[in-house]
Picture 1 (cartoon, rainbow, N blue to C red):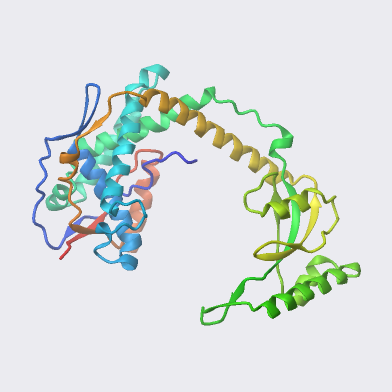
Picture 2 (cartoon, rainbow, N blue to C red):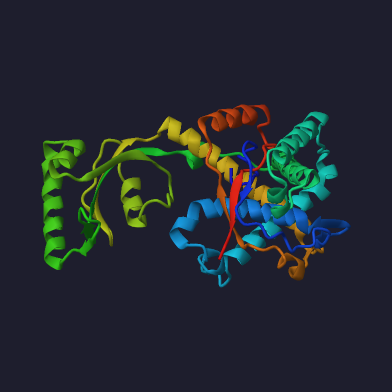
Length: 365
């Protein structure tokens, strides 16, 4: 599902700060407002640091410690600005849903509230005071964020009940195929170096594929692919399938079950394709569910957009700027015992009330 959730937030372990200078942010400040709802900079800081920790762990080795001051997304903004903007968009969504809970009779049950309290308590107890201060992670802040995402999940399910999810058999249908593909642009050698084909090489490739096609009189597509060392794949496709060149799709649509095409040439490759079934039952049902999911999400976004239009959401950029990205945040390595304990705790508090990934923190030079 495309809906963003605060999932996989692990509780075990502890935050370690090798160099701690304290946080210059005023935790009592309001970073955004929605009607009478004030959004504390503390919860924004906590969510930003969570996002930063995940990205530090994945990308720091590739882009270096100054990645947060770079425009890696091509947006014209730094990575730090992009993350902060994304976090505030998420909060706009979360607090909008919270404000409309009564519209769908959504509430948090006593059991859900207790799970949230337990998850937040475990996170607070498992970390040092210095680390918690760095992320402004109080019991109340962690509970609030977990509550917001639990509300989001429940609101999503309540909203999509009214979505139009009728999908016809024709719309969902996926035809089975076997496809041989031969690239005509260039190739990589064993060292990873790319060489573009010459005109003569492309001509030779085309002649060889034509020869292979003629051999289909006596042999099947699988045998041809093996003999010529061509790439071959099987699968299922739908009409207007974005994975395939439109020229190839037109040919596939014109074939009957058991028929193999002539050589199909696009700008990048040559193809031989065979239709294996008019309807791949498993793929068709999976596609039906995918279409339903897309329609549900689109309907959810439509309702959300109506609520958010001219709703007065306002972000105080001067307060948002006080959230600093000066420390490197990476996930703390776990021992086997830590992993086992984490899995045990995750089992107990799953769904949408799982706690926060542990991180090690060091200060950037």
